[in-house]
Amino acid sequence: FAARQVTRSVFGAASRRAFSATAFNASKVVVLGSAGGIGQPLSLLLKLNPRVSELALYDIVLGPGVAADISHINTKSNVKGYTPDPAGIKECLTGADIVLIPAGVPRKPGMTRDDLFNTNASIVRELAKSCADHCPDANILVISNPVNSTVPITAEVFKSKGVYNPKKLFGVTTLDVVRASRFISQVKGTDPANENITVIGGHSGATIVPLLSQSGHSLEGKERDDYIHRVQFGGDEVVAAKDGKGSATLSMAMAGARFAESLLKAAQGQKNVVEPTFVDSPLYKDQGVTYFASNVTLGPNGVEEIHPVGKISEFEQGLLDKCLVDLKGNIEKGEKWAQENP
Ligand code: NAD
Ligand code: LMR
Image (cartoon, rainbow, N blue to C red; front, side):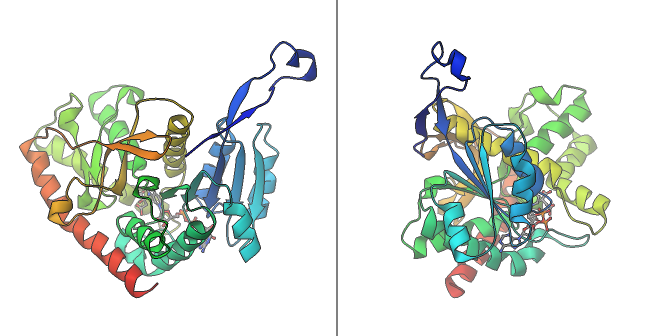
């Protein structure tokens, strides 16, 4: 997106003469579902991000409450909360550069992400309609599960309103990358900050494919299988530990804030910003898989380049084959539902 250049002194009047014309980029970031388990810490992290100049927080409950609380933090961004009335959501979304959507219900033990479809599909569809109406040029970051289906639903809504831009719609799969990097550091005794494991595919079970072979690490046998299982089912670990009270929220907030930060960096001129993310992708379209997560170079207009998967091991190819089967089903389910339930 075109980050708006604003010239302003960030210093007081006395130093303004010496430091006039300090430039920063104005970026309006919106969180839809800001009062939830993810929404609150995500909003907090965004408030701490100096690249954000305006933070708009919307929820069906407590949007203004969370906003009032966060607004006292002494960083420069302005914060406003919104309630679900048509004027509120319009003002909330107008001028947005980035919209993060963590609105929706989380899993309970025994559920798959697909079990959330019936509830979350319509929540995401309605919010996507508002985005298409009020901020069609914003980068839309879908967190609500099942991501493999909610991203296609969002795309169908934008297409139906004639404003779909595949470069600006992202399924947030950053948590898989964060987990893959943390878990390998635990196995290998390395610093997780230095690990960056590419994770491709989608965001549920077998559709999550970590590419260890590209990281310089190798694992064999049970150690490898345990690692892959932990990355693919890391979400279930948290769901089980929270025992009916929700799924990952804090690690997800960090992951969502990281992805938003990457987009802001790219928008504000930084080069070579690469994140794996679930986007409208040419990579496996010939196999009917129209969305796929792989490394993506981000730029001022969203997706700049979708990287091919590259060289992978035979074992990883087996994982990818399974991934593509499940992913195709998840995507088609979302598209079909959105077309039949406009
Ligand atoms: P939560 O129940 O704690 O919060 C959800 C929030 O959404 C609530 O505040 C609720 O009021 C709000 N909401 C519901 N309907 C809304 C609507 N129509 N408009 C605006 N707000 C609305 O749930 P959570 O733990 O924050 O999880 C949210 C979603 O994120 C779930 O679907 C979960 O599965 C998903 N999730 C995704 C990832 C990922 O990696 N992509 C990771 C963790 C969780
Ligand atoms: C996760 O990966 O933690 C999220 O998708 C939430 C979940 O349901 O596991």
